[in-house]
Length: 226
Ligand code: CDP
Ligand code: CDP
Image 1 (cartoon, protein in one colour):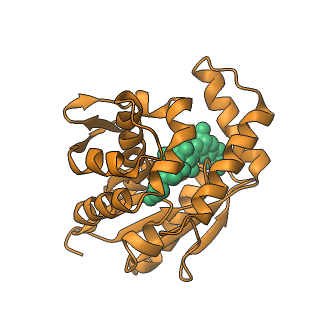
Image 2 (image 1 turned 135 degrees about the vertical axis):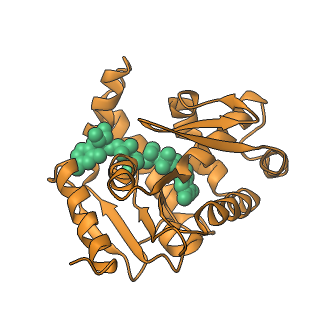
């Protein structure tokens, strides 16, 4: 692609996708795009508008009439919907526990994956999500599938929450993560699954730096620098 490779990073909740995707993008001077933020944005707007999460028609209207945009930032990206910044709000527990239902709606996936393809079309991008390597960018030159044990992922979320002053018990977080992974892996349209040609990395016992360098190796081998 004109601006470089397409790098797709998929995997379950809290496997470390956005953390390492941001760092990989920085390293290669690529754009970073967090597709989960787009599903979260639509979910937030549905909640704010008092729309029931199973009202597919109303949610399809929302996705059709919303403008999601990103601006780069030293912490990754700021997220806007219809011009309002929602970077923090889309991380609330309310949104987190509702997003998988919204992400299962066909009209939502169709619209958002189209926007994602447009954002990625010239390459030079690291995009993270659940279906990037399988559905959004099936021809991406680099596909990474990050996994980690659910216990480790719950601990990571727990630590992040503590820093934000939220004190949800660890076992509750683990149940939430399991429920979301189950929904994301069992939906009809583009469920969370590893692409056949993706490189799987188990991050359970790896530092952020080692995951980044593993991914950089895969990218460099594609760029024929090795
Ligand atoms: O960061 P975290 O693992 O909590 O999730 P996220 O990447 O922000 O994604 C939130 C939710 O959006 C996921 O649980 C999926 O339901 C949905 N999602 C999706 O369906 N497809 C994507 N490409 C990205 C996210
Ligand atoms: O995007 P995703 O939900 O996959 O994960 P994340 O939002 O990047 O969160 C992962 C959390 O685990 C962050 O707090 C990271 O600092 C931490 N972590 C990691 O990402 N990778 C490791 N190898 C170790 C810890």
